[in-house]
Each structure stands twice: as C-alpha cells, then as structure tokens.
Length: 434
Ligand code: CAP
Ligand code: MG
Image (cartoon, rainbow, N blue to C red; front, side):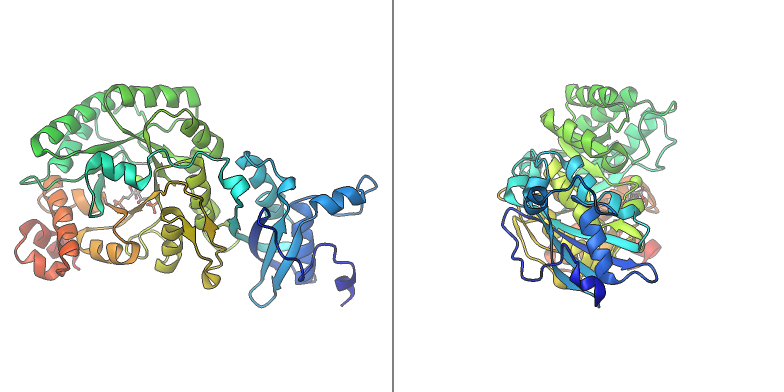
C-alpha cells in the first residue's frame, strides 16, 4: 500500500518505555482517507507534526520527540500511541491535554474520534496532589466504616428560600427514629440566587446540620456548592463554609475547568472536595468527538477531588452502562488498575495516590440501592433527590426508606421481603416499584 512506505510514526516493533504516555484512540476517517493516514495525522497533530513538511524540522527533534504508533487495529478502529515524556511539561495537566486531547478533535479528515484512555507514567502521576482525604478520610470523619453512604440533593433543584432549604436538609439528615441520611447536598445549579443567597443558606443549613448531628448522635455532611467562575469569590465561599464548621465543598468541576479544580485543591484548605460533573455529557457522550468519562475521572483523581459522580451502573436515569461505570469505579478507587481490552481501557498504576469515593446518583430510588451496591460495591454514595423528597410521606420518610434499603442490602435481604416489616420502605416500593 502506497502510504505504508512513508509512514513516519507507525512502528509495530516499538516497545513503549515505562516513562511514555500511552494514548488509546478510537476513530473513523472520512471517505477516501485510509485508516493508516488517520493514525499518521493524529500522531503528528498531537505532537511535533503538521499537515505538510516544514523546513524548520530537524532530525534531532524528530528523534527525541517522535511518538510511536505501536498498535493498530483497523477492525476495531483503535490505535495505541506512545508519546515520549519529553514532549510534555509533566506537572501541567492543561498543557498535556492540549497535546493529546487538543487539535486532533478538530481535524477535518476524521469523522469520529474518541480518546478512550490515557495511561500516565509515574513521572506524571506523582506531580499531582491527588485527593487530600480519599475514601478512608471520609470514613474516618463520619465513622461510617462498613456500608455505603446515603445522601440526598435538596429539591427542587433551585427555588426554595434559604430557610426552606435548611429545613429540607434537617428533615433529610434527621429522618425518622434516627434513620436519617449521612449527606445532604446542594444541586449543581444552586449557587447564590436571589431567593437563596449563598451566605444565608450556609448559615441556616449548617446550623440545621449541627442540630441533626446532636439529635441523632451521627456525623452529618453538608455538601455546599461553592462553584463560581470568579475563583476569588469561590475561595471566599469556601472560607465561609469552613468558618461555619462545614467540612465539604462541592465543585461543578467541568464548568469550572481543570485549572480551577487543581488551584482550589492546591490551596490545601482541608475541605473535602465533592466533584459534580454537570456538562460532562458534552465531552463524554458517544458518538462523535469525545473523551471518555473514565479519562476525565482519572484526571480528577490526579487533580485531587475526594468524591466524584460517575453514574449509577445502569440503575438510574443517566447514560453510562454497568460495565463502563465499573471500569471507572476501578480506576478511581483502586491503586493498581488492569486494562480492560473489551472496554478500551489501558489500566493505570496510582503509586499510592488516595482513592476517590464514587457517587451513584441520578434517577435512583430506594429499591434500586441493592443493584447499585451489587454492581459498584460498598465504597459508594447512594444519592437521590426525587427518590427521597418524592416519598409519599415526605422527606424524612424518604430518608428513612433509603436507610432501610441500605440496611436490607447489607443484610442480604430482598427489598420486597424487608419492606414487609419496614413501612417507609414499603411505601417507596408501593409508589416506585422494585
Ligand atoms: C440527581 C441530580 C444529579 C444527577 C447528576 C440531578 O437528582 O441531582 O445532579 O445525579 O447526574 O440534578 O439530576 P435525582 P450524574 O436523584 O432527582 O435524579 O450523577 O450522572 O452526574
Ligand atoms: Mg443535580
């Protein structure tokens, strides 16, 4: 094949170095462009090349910085590319992504391109702070050691006054007969609206959190949404939460951007960082030009979030099937992650970087909890808004039903069976089914 001769980057005999950055791309080329040409152009455009030969290139640069396409699978439309670490500023995530997740997503000769995964070498992983608390830190703080966490989102998403918001939180944390939720969070689009300004909401809601803690004797967490595109204002909000005794700050990490997340983490405020991923769909949902949620999750682990929404493994309302979500749980919660060929993942070593607690949320209701735990394990937050405040007897009963559903799952008793002797759960089942 003609173009085979002058392939500059294709080298099936190349063995990647431990220090290489390995990228797995899945793509289609437009009509008339061979698959191999696509690989050439992707490799060039993401590193040292451009669309034509240039007089300013020299052999020394080419030799030192040339990436190698070491695996090419035309049937599966996959290429594995090893990039020499010298191409990158290892502690500059934005710079790295501008290379291997940058211009290539805009190239005319491609009709689709999905960046499935990046395997980062130790030289890069160790440049990043990672989670300050991780799963252990959150379990240590809350004394919730042997079960998943329970949580709700105050609903409606926005609209309540600060006073009403704090009361809904109190109901959810208190529950009934001491069966209340561990976590209450602000919704992703609740920041500081006129009807519920941030400072008032913090004062009232954290006071209600303290009240519920005292009455139940259990640690209660409030995930305060400090998201603001003006970083200084976001820091002011973080400081206010901390001054009021709040331990967790929620960041809408995608709309904030990687730099804001890393900069906030590096302030070392001591706050637990809860990462909501609103807008990720514009980047991760197939088909088209996408970056996998798996890769985003690995980046957020490195930048240092402590909790991350990653889907419900098929149990809820958002896309993201069971198998895909499990690869993400694996990538954020374990230290040595194996490649999963079928799911187009490369695996990853984390060299002791703390794990991120997975958050299952979106369209859940109590009866779905056992399948979430079965698929995602015990290191998970079972979080639901509608599935709590939509309970026929209101928020507190909804909270109790969620707690009862976790109890049933941990005892290995079916929801149907357990509901017979647990009224709040039975009423949830009557309304939403199994
Ligand atoms: C869930 C939620 C969360 C979604 C986000 C919402 O509410 O608060 O933002 O879970 O999706 O606003 O929809 P419900 P994901 O429990 O009432 O559905 O977790 O997949 O990022
Ligand atoms: Mg929400």
